[in-house]
Length: 111
Length: 113
Image 1 (cartoon, each protein chain N blue to C red):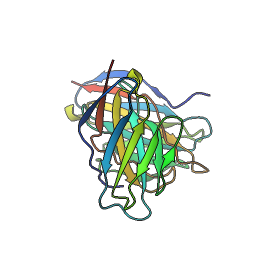
Image 2: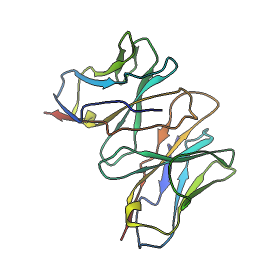
Image 3: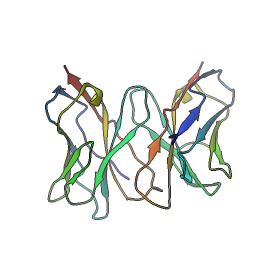
Image 4: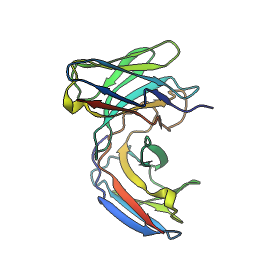
């Protein structure tokens, strides 16, 4: 797993969509993009992951650029409980991999 | 179904002492990893255990050691504690049999004084 680049912090208003960007310009063809988030006083929590196509689940959507050098995590309607540090991680798939975390993006949700 | 459980939640130790942290993985999981998270930083990988053996190791000194038991639970031991070892220690579990999801516990807060 190797480094990604994310903004240090972002703000959003409650019930509005949030787009969290991530750059991974040197990503290899077999690297997945994983997103985890860490709420205050908790361990990281899996959000979503993808390889090439856009992905959706109950928590969020992941939009991956066509050249795969960047991606965007989309929270469709931010709630106060979404306030957390969001980590974008590139790396192999599989549960045996180690995760290389950067500093992440601190998301603040304003009421 | 209990998730990843860790103990103790908080502890304070003195420099030079030794500490043992414990982790029970999520039911059905056979792989346990440990991470260290200093204040304001992302978690850093320490090592991973599978089938009671250390399979991967991050850039941590030999003072950090671990163990995995036949029931898949795990311990992290840190000897000769330094002030810089003060951090949140996270346990993560996963299953090599299936899936991509790695689950984390809430961590053990270690303060070295």
